Length: 494
Image (cartoon, rainbow, N blue to C red; front, top):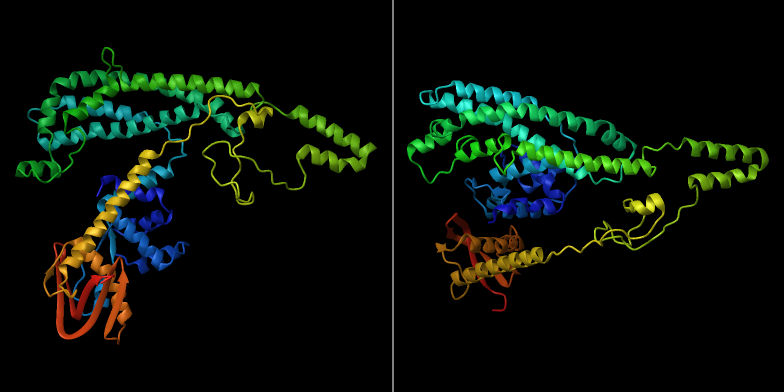
């Protein structure tokens, strides 16, 4: 399984996020499709149990969920499947869900930058310099290293996201009145103050890092505690434990690159400041252009006074013209559905969508503000999705080949008459192919029937009751034992 497949649910139906939200708050509890459907219904999301089961199986295939291994003692096939059909969230599924939800929750937020963390960072570096790194106990030294990197990690995340937002804002032309006021009166001044404070606070941190540089190899070698240190002391090389920040020379090099520049290679703080100044300069130019063209910052008082004089004159001289004048001024006409070709390849809905349900159209600035339909700039290019298409086709072929191999193995494991002998050994994938046939076949047999048969995936499965006999199928993942049942699997055209 590819590590990136755990993110596949993001581009699928919103149901997947809701289902993972149910599991993420359960502290790794085991839930059946019926349990998940009930919890979704309690939150106002109505999904059939069959749909939930399909979604759960897809999440299991991507690695976000796994099937519970605690089946326990069962007496019937129905009891086995009822207990086997329980899911719980994986560790990586939990972390991916929390990461995705935190990013989506803050995508439109403006996050402030707390420069007070730099004061904490400088104090932590000074405290580390005061220690005798050669004799200080490793646990105390590790705490001092964490005190350095914890505020820097939070600060770097905040300032990177803030300046990335500035870079996106610099080309905004669709500003309303509140956004115009925010950019022109608040943001420009705020960025200037923050850059000045950032430069002032970064200089002493750079000096402290330069003083600490000769001692960093000793700090890295001795500052070890926690689980990573215990694993290293035990000499376990197959167990991978990620140490905290500061436990490698690369972490200190990254920290130094933020506050210390070298010839031809400015510090990250200086680079961010330079890029922020360029972005603010571009943003200021755009604000000036928008203000001159009458957007947001221009007053419409004179226009409203002129309209009021027209309405007053019409009320005295020609009252019958008042409705027409008001309709012309405020667009109070009957509803009309005006259609047109989409402007680019990102049109959100097809042209046959009713305007009652369609989102507002994205009207170009030149048409909205100046009534000019002249094309400006370069035409939008159609995105090349050949790589994604080839990836999806390759993944589909791989899945089809794996399913075909599992079916071939299952047919090969059966005897000449198709019967599965007690103690048959097969792979886990072949067992899954058998289970897909076994469930419908047992359902077709019913509680009182003697025989059940089903045909699917090019195979035919026959289940018969056999008193006193049992059929066991062994796989690397475990053994499936069916009491008082005989199974035969043959090709569908046999």
